[in-house]
Length: 423
Image (cartoon, rainbow, N blue to C red; front, side, top):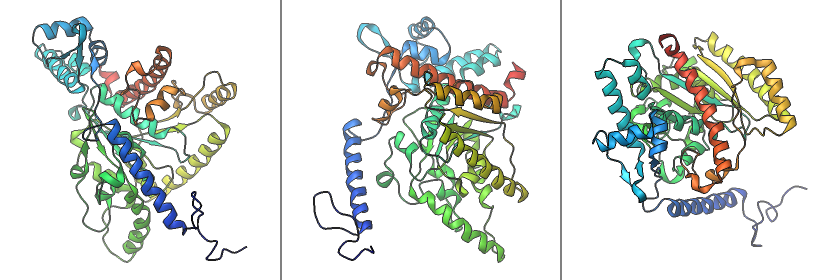
């Protein structure tokens, strides 16, 4: 039966008269936005901005790659930053302190002529040795594959290990931005996303003006919001104008790469959280990438969906290559996410994938853990939450899995830079 003016729209929960769908949905969006703002103000007062906890001396020592005793010696000798002292004389270091210690130890190693040792403390890439900017796209067009969770933990892991990292939120839903404490409709305005640097209207912003520092030392962010979707609408129009002879600048597949060139010297690794669709944004990200991580939830429907994703990606990238796009990946890896080791069917699917793709499936899977989901309730990651919030077994299992995954990717980055051959 066709809707009449009296029945059209959405019935309200409180029994009020039906509203037009757009007004009802807008009301829900505003109500949710207000609650998210209030939640943020409760979690991160007084400025409603996220901060990062301090690290114990043992955690700091493990991150830097030295013993806790050696850190104590440095502290007693007055070398490096002075740690905060808690109850019982326990020492705590901010991530900025840890970065300063890395620089101090690297300078000491260089003074002794040990460049290899200095690089273990401060693993920045060296362009003089041909170590290019590593741009990693984390992608899959099926929701629920753990894409954003994988991207944010990878970016933070690389920052914790001393790299200079730029995280790029390319998803209009802005989940990655939310993990860094941003509420897009409140904290961002026009041209505050990557779209501001890749738009076609002749007045793009330099990416360096869009990049924002985060509370995570060594990790900057290009946030996302709904304006990113404009790239999907404006690209076909720009291609039509190009056919009439108008100069639109680089074609869509080269625009993200051109934007990143503006800040390339400032970073070692760029981690791009792609949108869950294979549109112009994702294609441009893939063409800018040196490496790709495809997240896969080990369920048969997800694997079947990934199959279609791979077919579509191959076809579209083939068209891009014929149009002059460069596609040179250092590595392409499949990351198994939300893995439950005791789930027999999941284990079978992972075995099936390994038999097909071999070493292109990362050895370490990301296990499903309540620690990850519980941390997400306060928009935090495993690297941010305190261990006191979980049972020891739960947090250790989750951290072991996450560190194994990200350590494997970090090793692939270093291999792409040729460090294994020079070691």
